Length: 182
Image 1: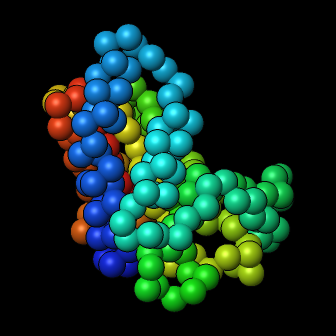
Image 2 (image 1 turned 90 degrees about the horizontal axis):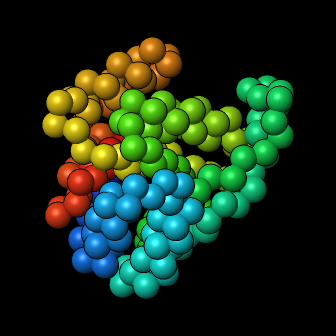
Image 3 (image 1 turned 180 degrees about the vertical axis):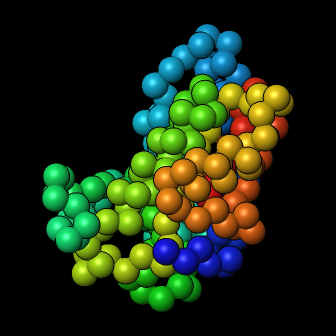
């Protein structure tokens, strides 16, 4: 699937504003200090609240059920992307899909993100008109690892293309976490 620059820029804009929230950063510090795991659903609820209150009023839905294209998937019959989002002013019924993963380990986080992208690619085209689909991963920052190299290698090993121009790695200010979007 193509990775349009406009879609990437919009998702980055949303994420930048989302991660600037001081209450969210405080929660990330508590998650780290208390070694809390399994907080992905909490994160998705916080992101849903952010989208609902966003001044740009994006249209969004969480975990809508879509059927797989049976020519691409024979084991499972449906998928629920974490979010589908449409920026106000975009063509009606054309969305971006956003899958969210969190893992303390960068390598595991990226592998899980790639698995989700492979699943989203199998959605039956007649179910929804996706402009593009993206994966967001949140992980503990490790200065000893080059995130871009790990993402590129894991995508390559999965038979997927790495689009460096529409990928980003960002440290979440005043927290021990970073996020990657591709």
